Image (tube, rainbow, N blue to C red):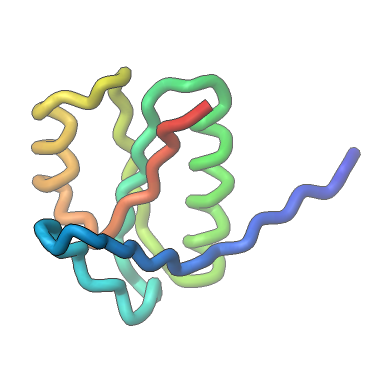
Length: 94
């Protein structure tokens, strides 16, 4: 069985047009609630479950899985907002 690893990073969004202000970066992941957003693509749920386990173990993060096919509709955006998650990790590509 091969060993798989993942690195958790803190990406920073950059916008050139100045019309969109990104949300502030979290100062820490410790004890946060993170939305895991799966669009139904094959094995995206497996990746998100692995990420959830690592976040819980290393940072005490609570996660909540949201799923809806592409494109995402207003219903799933509303569900994520109601859950009061402080950040989201999404699997949106192949």
